[in-house]
Image 1 (cartoon, rainbow, N blue to C red):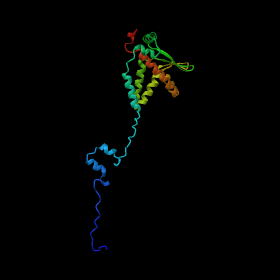
Image 2 (cartoon, rainbow, N blue to C red):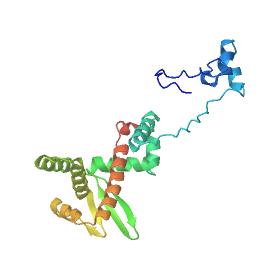
Image 3 (cartoon, rainbow, N blue to C red):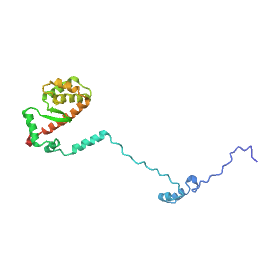
Image 4 (cartoon, helix red, strand yellow):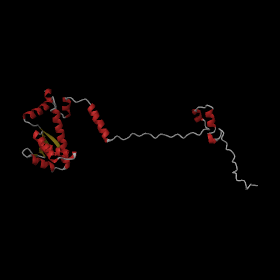
Length: 218
C-alpha cells in the first residue's frame, strides 16, 4: 500500500555508468584507457565511426579581364624587343622601301600610303605636321573634357581629318581642315571606326620606320 503521508520522492534505481555503458562510450573508452591506439579503435566495428565528410572539389576562380590584361602586358614586357628588320617584316616592308619612306619624309615633308577598305573603295592617308598637333591641343584645352572617352573620340576625329587625303575617289588635298573635319563627323560610325583602325596602323608603321636610330640602319 502506498504511504500517503510520506512526501519523499521514491529513489530511482542507479543507472549503469560503468565503462561498458553506452552513455560513456562503452568498450571504446575501456580500450582507450587500456592503451589501445586510435587507429585500432577506428578499425573496431564496435565503435561508431564519425561519418567522413567529403571535401568539395575546389573550383578555380574565374580570371577577370583586368587580371588577364595585366598578364598579357607582363608577357609583352618580358618578350625580347624586335629588331629593326623584324619590325619592317611586320608591315611587309623591305629596307629599300623603308628608305623611300624616310626620303619622302625628309624631302617632301610627308609620306602617303593607300589602304584598301573593300571592293573598289580605298583610302589614302598622309603623315601629319606639328600644326595638326597644336590645333588638337588647343581644342582639348578649350573643351576641358571631364571624360577620357571624349578626349579619345576627339583625338580620333582630329587625327583622321588631318591625315585624310583621298577616300571613295574624293580628293581632300585642297579642302580646309574644317571641311575635312566636318566630313569626318558625318561619316557612319562603323565607317569612322574602320578608318581609325587604318590610321592607327599607318601611324604605328611610321613610328617603327622612323624609330630612334633608324637612319643608322642605312
